[in-house]
Image 1: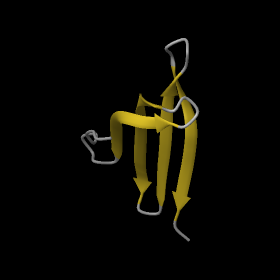
Image 2: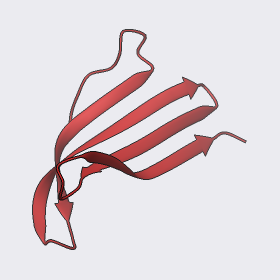
Image 3: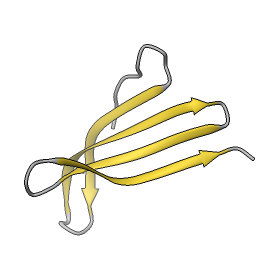
Length: 65
């Protein structure tokens, strides 16, 4: 997956192909990485449902201790 950052360099949007282990095939996908601040990053993954609509299927928050 690859993609650009926003103008501030804080939110990255990646698009490309992922392997779907349930369907046993590659499918298009999207992920975002939000560098909220130096101590917190938010990662989200999106998928497309049978109706063609995109939905978020994974979210992870990384926080520095």
